[in-house]
Image (cartoon, rainbow, N blue to C red; front, side):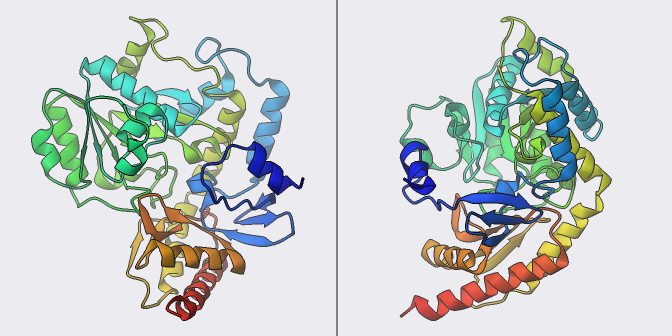
Length: 400
């Protein structure tokens, strides 16, 4: 059997038609397959690889930490320098109330921990979330996820989770003193880079404060410069009670976190003791990699703004009647077509022409543009040229 056959036989599949491209290496903004083909990466590992692939400082940090120690004890018992150093660095670049970091293995686990924390702090059970929101696929996170197609097959889910339309006013009237938390994305990721109406997040924050309900902001995809600012919530001048991070947090290694004020977080340490526990959360190698990546990004902060400009340049150089809409926030964009079918054909054609992209989970008629932040002007123009060609080829064949 070749490796593709072994992949299909022995690696659990997430769909009936995986791309099954064998990647041999990745560098900068490019992926290379086993046949030597070069693919311009417009996905960045779903915003994981924000500073590009194979960053030398991240690789060195991984090697140095692996040589010192890897796993030594379950999370929270021993002082592990990579965890402490990264938590300290993160809190230096967050509002003062976000001063205590609980590291997890993933963004979904951060969501689970945040839900437990909100219930523990408030003594309440109700949680509000939003349609077309994505928070992960574990049982609790799936309960928050804003799409019945994905939820329905796994019921019963968590009780007392209520969904509202993203950006609608109705949530303010329904939000009362029985609600433990509202979980919201500062920019909706899988909805196709959707931005709420101006002032809506601020009003949501104020309503949560009035009812002593915790505001949980999910920046798992939008964090670390993706939206043109370090954190997307900064654009609306709000401060979460609990911040969720993942994806780019680990610099390419698995890592998530929920971050809150220490006086909230300490409620998980007693009654019961070990109220939240993880074996591999905050793995020292992942924390070392994440800290190296974040340090590199802070040193090259101009990339956050340049990447946003380059993605706008990319969009400016794509034009076709088949494009129904363009959405952008920073270095994150979506091209909307008439249907999933047309979009999928464009995506497949892009792959043939040397560009790697996909669609959005709750906006399948939208083509994803989320490159590494190191994308250059030349690479942005190359991407635009490939996408333009792909649209023209599909358009010429589509109605025949």
